[in-house]
Length: 420
Image (cartoon, rainbow, N blue to C red; front, side, top):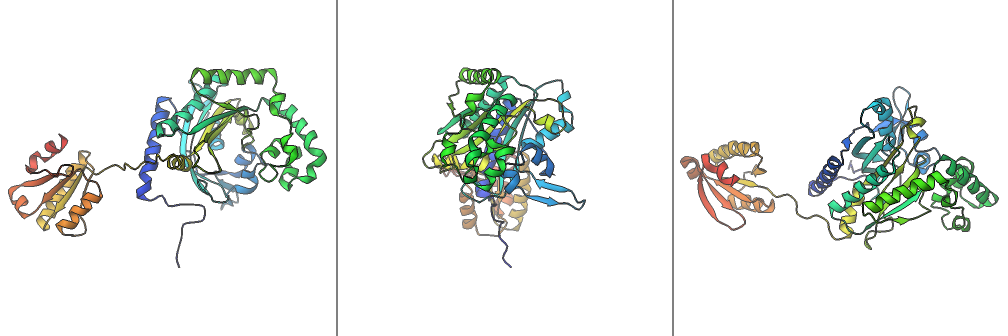
């Protein structure tokens, strides 16, 4: 039987995985500068956690979750997104009692959604996200957005933009909800079954429908912007003011909704503007979620965060023709000729690695010419040649692969010579 990688997943092979490591290094360095600390949550959680937080009318909960019953007859779900688990951990571990607030966290790891595979979208995918929980200061909204923008800048992207909206507070959303119900009700039978189910439960989700997006009523639907109360409008103006102070350009889009029920106030997406990127331009999305901690039994703890796909970041680099090609080179390759030379080489490579030098040697008993070709393929900076004469003299031949210069170096002076 021939086994293949499951549909909607991928093997990230060594000739590509170094790019992922570089992205992760950029992420960790930026989070360190902004004082965000890493959190690691389980890959699966109780299904009800996502039903209560993500929203039981969303496509994620209704169609895309990987849910199973464990041996204790409990319903569990592979995490489809990261915020719910982080907020659950925040509440369970009483982080709301920490002296320093807000609690600033970040995560990276696999998420799972059962959806149609396409470029940059998989059933198992990797997200980086941050959550700042415990503050309702508009300045932290701007900080979160700035951090996301800086990840893309540090990675080398230039063709992307920030799109911004306000979803308002509970009062504003309720007023908008009633207007949407009144707007869609007379013709709801013309919409898909999902939209019909959402009319009373969560009519805002209708605006996010992919099936009926061209329906005339979609174009004339009441805008949330018209229902923002004074407090919501003032909050949004403050967020924009801080973005202006940070020098971050943005576009206002009153139709930006986001696909999760827990969002309120600030909502944003970062989109690729590269012509070669494809139809789905969103790279990153996030927003404020005041009330989420209370929804799962915790105290009031306003929060804001975002999640970005690492797959889509790497695709965006390719679309801009900025994909990394400078894979880290090898410091030293050891070529050995004969059994005694192999023994000496094996002992030597251990010492080189202890001193932080990326080193490799032949394990296939190949001829010298084949070993030199291997060193060249691995882009080694130096080659050390050890044969019978070198073993007898306690020396090695050290070749600089950049200029072809070769010289004899005593074994006890080799490390010092390389470190120069």
